[in-house]
Image 1: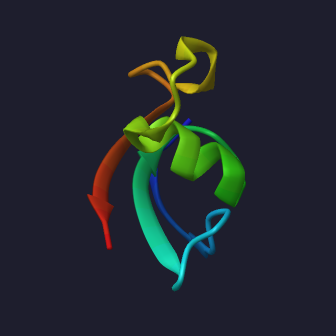
Image 2 (image 1 turned 135 degrees about the horizontal axis):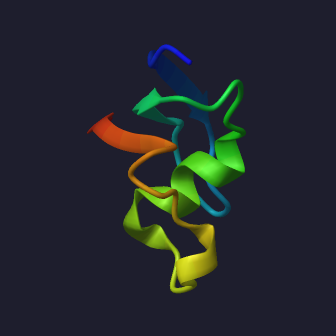
Length: 60
């Protein structure tokens, strides 16, 4: 499977504005909830991607 850049935008709970997460990914789809949790904002290791699945390259 070929890696793709996935740009995922949305609004996190209680946030004042939208956020965008850019992942280099082998996954066919990443939801916004998965993206923000895996960006380092979750306290659960189950929410993070393996390096083989996806890597966060930008957050804005």
